[in-house]
Length: 340
Ligand code: KG4
Ligand code: ZN
Image (cartoon, rainbow, N blue to C red; front, side, top):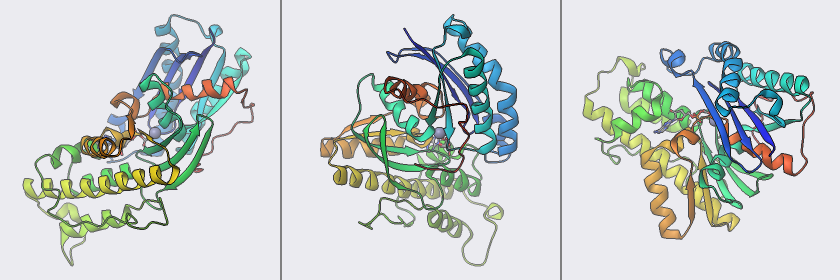
């Protein structure tokens, strides 16, 4: 049975997995860097790439050991080469190319965002195509028309901040710990989602499936500081104020994500929505998507927590490329900024 080594280093997780052509997961290892970036309130690219360099070989070694096979048993090497942080991507791409060359095995480049959607295929254990795909992470917010695993069409993306980035930055303003998404979710539990009327940019514009969260971020900032004050961290907020701000902010983001996703379903005529990326872990978002999907008879597939955040199991999308005979050569290069 052909075995694929998949490598993921697009941001701050160093990950590797071994999967078969039947999409069976033989082993999966994720080394998180959360602790290294915590004190900065966000991912520091230079720290991330150095940590990948230290971890990539031990992570691959451990993956192979856990599966009880040797590197020589691998039939292809796959790697996420786009999009992501340049230095982080380079570590994975270089490791993958080196292994492919040394082992004499084919190389397959993976689009990290499309892999986030494929996490839903892996979680569901059944075909999920065609579907609308929503990827919501710290770096990206993308809506896709996914006709099949090899045919993704970008329908909309953020024109400024990603949804996760907005969560992380608003958390800093509210004095909540990194990563911001889970902190805001927790604080929001005791808050009033309608206390502040924050903007839902582009939500009612029928001509676009794009997102924009930077105005929302600014609105939260001014709600904290009021006119004339400029450093939100200098403002002492009560626990209830933090909870209300968190809940109102979260509700605005969720409204935009839910609204545009179901609009994309109307436009495509598809009846299935697949959601991946770290922000898909958000409980309020999950509840709202579930309610709306039930109302509209949509098949909703949300990747479970450990497949939402960056991992290498979702790199099993490489199996689809392999089956279609789509390979890369050793000129494969990291493409940091290309969202497609
Ligand atoms: O997919 P991911 O692990 O890494 C990237 O590729 O960016 O996503 C990380 C993002 C962070 O911005 C984090 O704050 C957000 O996902 N996140 C959440 C939640 N858990 C993680 N956002 C909202 N609610 C959550 N529960
Ligand atoms: Zn990601």
